[in-house]
Image: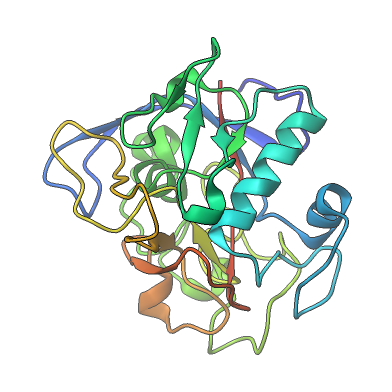
Amino acid sequence: MKESKYENMIFVQGGKYQPSFADEEKEVFDIEVCKYLTTQKMWIEVMENNPLEFKGDNKPVECVTWWEALEFCNKLSEKYGLEPVYDLSKSAQGILMINELGGEIVYPDVANLKNTEGFRLPTEVEWEWFARGGQVAIEQGTFDYTYPGSNNIDEVAWHIENSDDTYNVGLKKPNQLGLYDCAGNVWEWCYDTTENIEEGKNYIYKTFDSSNIYRRLKGGSWDDIDNDCAVISRSHDQATYDFNSVGFRLVRTI
């Protein structure tokens, strides 16, 4: 397996599969994925504030909006000398643009995320691929587990039956790729808006202003039942809202 020079980032081989929410196969290119949810320690080191409800260095970030997650991704990219993915200059108007390599700034519905280098949120197609265990799980015959890495929710997730708030990351069994807490603990923001994904597209982004305020969430949380923590479960919330059950996980193109 390829080694990443960035802390806690794991190489995830790309491949083709049919997501639970799509009518055709989708392709995922090689990416790096953080093996942990973004923690409060990671957040404070970059953002220099802690707006979170459940305090603890190794607890996951929560009570951050989708837009704040993008800001964190950009600042972490700058820290490592990487080109930030997101142009947030008009974020107050709900407008996002994408910085592709080579200096081109493009609309988020046509962006080629393969042509970026900074830290970012995963697309829903990417999220389901790595949560299921990707090519490793396909080869093991475990790709169709109900939860990321297991058919037993208590092995891999903090959920409403075994927790009353968030827990330190990495305490449960990881999935087949070595990724922790893909189920439960906190929901994970994805890049996508909430319309049905189109044929030939690997993500869906349909808003250019504040008219569409919802973004996709995956994975369930400490406050959810087992079905909500299943790998095929989908939710969404307003991009400007923050909740004590919603956080995020970093990925980057390689």
